[in-house]
Image (cartoon, rainbow, N blue to C red; front, side, top):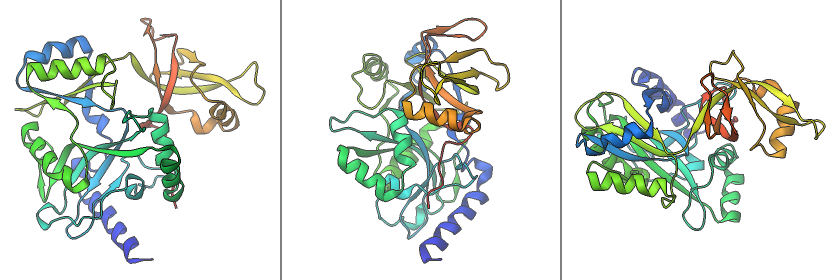
Length: 324
């Protein structure tokens, strides 16, 4: 075992020590979704800060004095291990100052094309599941670049600020971002700034996302709100449906919202490779959360014209591979 392996092993013990403040808990468990119509009413509330909601892979950063920052995906791999994603994120080698030792922060990683536009979530997940060397060639061959953000902080140094009002946590975010060489997502608490952010996302002019916004309360810890620009739903796979036209491949999935009661089927949006893999290993997919887009749904939950977008990186059965 190398010195670096011992160091990373030590980091896991630090994570476990601070598990009470959700160090390795997917951030989505803290959020509550509201309709975009309701979010627009908060534009005129000066205590509510709007942040750009990226559609990438969430990561947890850990800072330790005298060492470079490291990152993990909060969701364990298929074997239950928390995999170090530091190499995939290409984090800087800058040593963390002593006063920030023990810091735990949350962020997101995107892939940007040559025009600075974010790639779809499934492409980001695919990259994060690659071995580091293969991933490096993938980026170089396609002209993609890593884009990192920091959007919240649980601990700064040895101080737990996870339940502090967001105006304090935002200052911590801004202090940590340069060390990770990351951006703070676009944000504003002014009426003009909020309207500009909403408009850029709604019209597709925002290159980083068309997903929606996150709403934080500057003066209170009342949980995190999110509002999506499109009608996007998270559903649970309950079955794999064979294809009628392609032998040995899946035609789609059956889905539910509770993992038990199937309410409908989704047949579009899957690649040929995914269809073959789903039919070959159905147990690998049943229990996964699928992110799907639809023009709406009936009162009993059946989606109108649903289309698969990606497997959810944080919810349900893990999609993360073990990386050697």
